[in-house]
Each structure stands twice: as structure tokens, then as C-alpha cells.
Amino acid sequence: MKAAAQKAKYGEVIEISAEDYVEKVNKAGEGVWVVLHLYKQGIPLCALLNQHLNRLALKFPATKFIKSVSTTCISNYPDKNLPTIFVYFEGDMKTQFIGPQSFRNGSITADELEWLLFEAGAVPSELEEDPRPKTRDVLFSSLKADSDYNDWSL
Image 1 (spheres, rainbow, N blue to C red):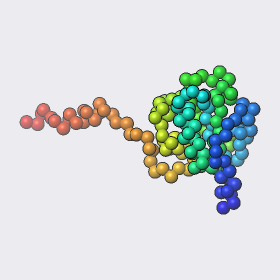
Image 2 (image 1 turned 90 degrees about the horizontal axis):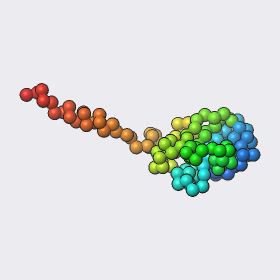
Image 3 (image 1 turned 180 degrees about the vertical axis):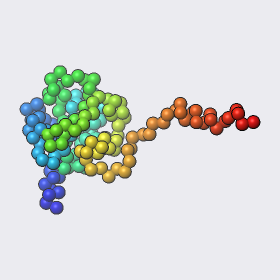
Image 4 (image 1 turned 120 degrees about the horizontal axis):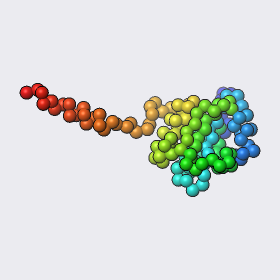
């Protein structure tokens, strides 16, 4: 119980500067997952992800959730790559999600973001399956439907 309480010490998204980066990310500690959101004010998808991450930080207090204005951490970081999420474990980058296409071009839900972070290993989700909408191959499904009608069976 004490170990769980010690692990559950974050519970919020904190803003960091470039000076904080090494301490908060690379030296986060043994067994610590870090989710870093690079964002910029005025980009709606960044604002949406900030909302989702605030919710997820409360739900998963053992994971350190941090954010930073993109150009504060990485000078000249291109806006076209925003939003960006880097996932670290024990100071090593494990995965990265770069640009709107990584987040369904702006229509990602909090559950979908949770699933991405779960797949990366950063959070222990209770979701049983990927909540993202299943894409259908319209061409294949129409071919399959057409095959029900067979000209050869007279």
C-alpha cells in the first residue's frame, strides 16, 4: 500500500521550461513513465490534448504528465509537428506521436488517447479494446456485396 501511495505522486499536468527538461524527463527516476506534450497556444488540437491529458493525469497519478510550449523545449520546433507527445520510461524515449495525423486530425477522444498511452506502456488502462473507430475498406466491402450476385449461376 505504501509503495502504491509513493508511486501515485503526480496527478496533474505540470508546465516545464527548457531548464527543467533534464531533471523532469531524463532524471525522472527509476520506474517512472513520463508523458511530455509539446504544444502551442492557438492550436485547437493542442488545447484538446491538454484537456485530455489533465483528465488522464488525475486518472493515472503514477505517470508523470508534463507539457511545454514546443519552442521553449526545442528551439525552432515546427508548428506542423504539433501537437507532439513523447513518452519516456526511466529517462529513455519509448515512443512519439507527432502531428495531427497521430491524433485522428483533431477528433481524438480522451479514451483514444488513453489507449495510445496504454499501448506505449505509460498507463495501465482498464479499456478492453481500442476505442478508435474501426475503418472499413469500402471498396472491398462493395466487392464482397457484388459477389453475392453471380452472373454465372443460371
